[in-house]
Amino acid sequence: MVSVPNDAPLPVPVRQPRFYVGVVGAPDVTTVKFASVQSPLLNVGVTLEYRLTNRLRLTTGLLRSTKQYTARREDYNWGAFSQQVAQYDFKDVEGTCQVLDVPLNLRYDLLTQPQYKVFGSLGLSSFFMQRERYSYPYVYQNMARYAEWEVVNANRHLFSIANLSFGYERSLSTRWSLQAEPYLKLPLGGVGVGKVQLVSGGIFFGAKYGF
Image (cartoon, rainbow, N blue to C red; front, side):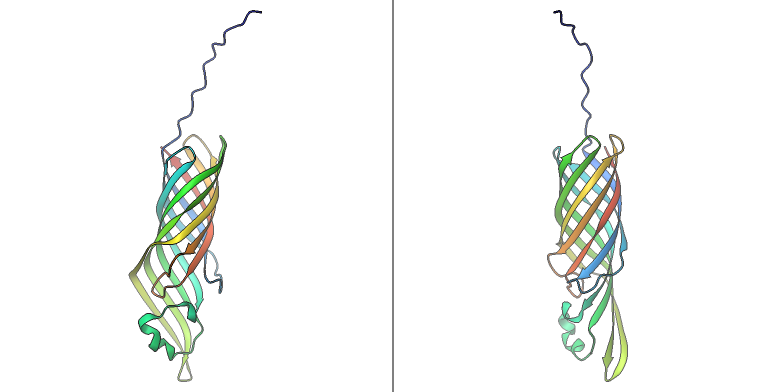
């Protein structure tokens, strides 16, 4: 038996990108101790990833979020306003906050295939409160009234939010991909002027380019 040499060239391995940039958007809901859940609001932002190994990536970015929620009176830390607020009769406070969210996460690819990846991610976020608006109806001296106040660029919360997510990434080419990523953000401390315990969640939808 005569063997015939195989002169077919070996396949060239595809080089994986080291950096990835992307844009994301997410319907996001926010609650405080699950007292109530408002309608979803849109979060948008940009992301940056650095591939550490074939499965591990460091991810960060800049996200602009709107947190809208209703919290009970006792969920707020009133601080210097405690005595002033004590004379008012009210139950709930509505809050709307414009937030810059800067995450720092580690992503691990649980399943890798040529056309798709399934991954999990853990990390921390820093919240920079751009604008906080609070309002509540109350009764004072048997008269119905309405209070509203605003705080601008007064609170920063470094690494105060825990991030947890799982996602699916679909390759369009060697450089372009789409992904969907359900996420949950859990408080490690109080947020905003009232130091409330914000919980938020949603699904990030995004597109990425690797280079």
